[in-house]
Amino acid sequence: MKALVPHLAVLVALAAMGFLLPPYHHGMMARVLVMAVFAIGYNIAFGYTGLLSLGHALHFCAGMMACGIAMREGVAAGPALMLGLAAGGVTALATGLLALRTAGVSFMIVTLMFAQAFHLALLYYGGFTGGDEGFPLPGAARRLFGLDLTQAGPRYAVALVLFGLVLLAQWGLVSSRFGRSLIAMRENEERSRMLGYNPFTTKLAALVISGLCAGIAGAAYGVLFGYVGASFGTTQYSILPMLYVLLGGAGTTLGPLLGAGLMAWLIDAASGLTDSPLAVIGVTLIGLVVFAPRGILGTLRQRGQKWLP
Amino acid sequence: MAAVILEAQGLSRAFGGLRAVDNVDLTLQEGEVHALIGPNGAGKTTLVSLLSGRLTPDAGHIRFDGQDITRLPAHARVARGIAYTFQITSIYAGLSVFDNLALAVQRSRPRDLTAAVQAAALRVGLEGELQAEAGALSYGHQRLLEIGMGLALAPRLLILDEPTQGLANGEINDFLTLVRGLKGTTVLLIEHNMDVVMALADRITVLHFGQVLASGSPAAIRADAAVQAAYLGGADAAD
Image (tube, rainbow over all chains, first blue to last red):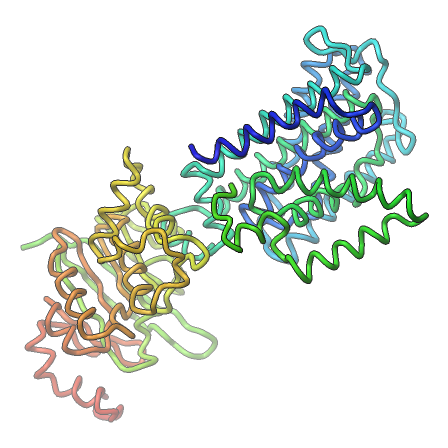
């Protein structure tokens, strides 16, 4: 239970930031929290189970689309979010059933291919999905438990509650016996098989849990920021959670948040200095790979900070 | 007379043109320690890989506890009680000794995992190393951890593939005590160290070029001229 302390400390700090931050950073931080939920999902698949997927944009965008289209058709935000959650899980189950017949580089390519096919399908059926341009969600529909999500305060609160729930769920998962079997798949699949663990079903379960996180993150992103579109299904959105996780520390519970937060701050800071902020990001990532290949928290943990969850 | 726990009939497996295991029959009695010996390349590891499900046979049948398991995947065989310890040490090098053992122990869903893991560590003398990273253990301790993980599954049949390879003499004696203390577990032991084989085995099967050369009590095997010839390297004497 010792590991509960850092988690709660982070959540308390985030709650305090909700009151202290100026409006601009307030909105940015809400975005970071939602993207951190996405990254936690990615962390469960990649950081803990060792499944390097290049197609998580599919689950994120499927969640966003399911939620957004449902709301456009008159469904309330709460049930629509649940639809988004389900869409993330169902797409992860469907693609996982096929992609997990492969491993390593093939797995990366198959997941990438699924995500590309999904993105192209969204564009092809643009009349229904809004295609390239997407569609806005009417402000009147963006209400949850009586909170008006077009307002910064409630928006931050909802993002924080969602993040808190997913963060604690992730911690509960990875410190459970099932979580240990996920890590075992990453560390030595053949040994795990000879201890009686079915690699296929174990990894599939990890992917579905990961997809659920991505789906609810996508749905929440749509509801909180009022826009839904196929652009969230591009490869960029498969790469982002991976970068967050690599930066913060794959296989650490707080790495996804740290990575998402740092990356947002870096892009923001770099935009003030140069016209090509992504170049700064590139240099940062190269530095990371050279000096701290396990990410920030992963490297700290390796260097003796064993308490880090 | 003890019951038959595992029965293999006509097992064959070829790699390219090489018949690594060629029409092998093998019967294991419940509770016995059965040694599998033979020169390098005789097909011992291939045979136990077929039994544990890491490889599928080209021909033949395997029955475990009265049921046909020939087509069962490896993880399902483990669930039925067949545990396999690797010849080349295969542990979770990046995880703690506790986690390594817990991954085996938690298969039987104990209520108190910590106590069960400590008991499993005690059996192989690793109770002082629980928090150590497994990859940082000495080679001998890694072998013991490997065996400890197999034992922690509480298997009905434990397949040990060259368990004493690389162990010091003192560790080998501990290993002998450990295997003698197993009650009700059938052991299939691949071993090159003949002292260990003679100390433990109730029965011995000798493999040579993928075929069973001889099978019987240690005394009978020791007296068998064909076995002597095979081990001395005179392959033609075995014909």
